[in-house]
Length: 295
Image (cartoon, rainbow, N blue to C red):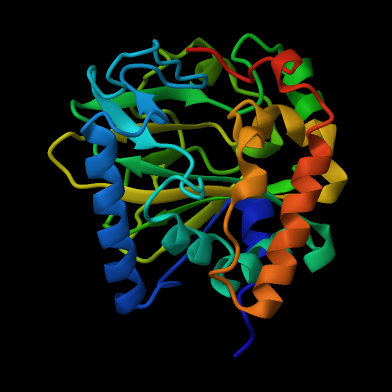
């Protein structure tokens, strides 16, 4: 039996769902680490969180304020050296299960990979939805502007890896290759039932890779457990094209201190190369980059 062509699915549909990339033991380990991380964040003792009701970065916390006081829906910086469970998340991010797929999707080798983002999407403290959007194209873009941006190489792979069943990602398959239709352009930002929309049905241990400029949104329920690892990995060819999407999250401040010693010698060497390529992007001033989306 031939291996599935994940790149073909991604290019056709804008996403590819890959079942069961984690073993039951790996799921259990990551759930424990995620629960402890979420508890830390909800207690107000981890400052880098996605706060309700803000949808997109930056999530700015006032000095001295409790970051989780108004409710949260995500925890940022899973590989941060100050996060107690960072070593568990580092092992997952740099695992062959993830990297082998990324190399297929980006059609590249180890020396092309760039370390990027790794965060945790969680059960919100109250029901919460994201509007329809493309990650790096404003809703105000004209059809011509959309098409121009959509023609650009992606230079990255982005994924959601679920530790519990998760159907909160809603996409319009194929929309990564075209401008929005008149119906999509005029629809309510939180419209339900757009023509062709589907919920991506993930079981625990499944991963979905998706083009971040596919038309998509999220709908999250406060009574349903959610622990979904949300990561991205880049290609060195992206350089400043990707810098805006990556550096807007502020990881340049601590990336040099990530502890890669938890990895075996081969994986550590690859990860170190990925980190150095990201650092080389740091010459682009993130304060001058601006943000891809607002809200």
